Length: 86
Image (cartoon, rainbow, N blue to C red; front, side, top):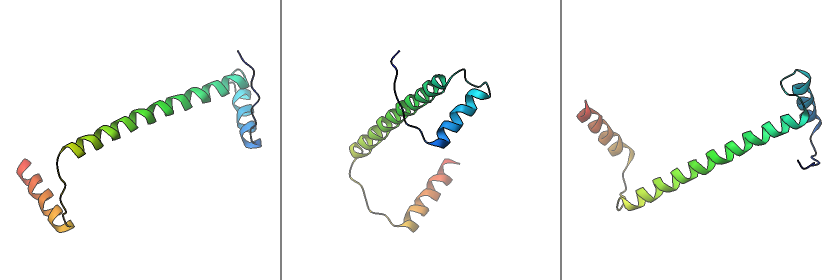
């Protein structure tokens, strides 16, 4: 493994030390590795969400020309759809 120097705030150092002292982690390195795993998972989820948003955008663009609609008309149409699906 490669050794790396990282600067932490006093609050972060305190939390790291507390996690080790409580027995939740065996070492400071274990805490940092766990934090990096969580960060990697978050990055992966963000990538998946972005792909979903891009797909939805493309589907919307492919669905045809949009139209202007005011709030009362939209509400009436939504109520009519809800009533029709009952």
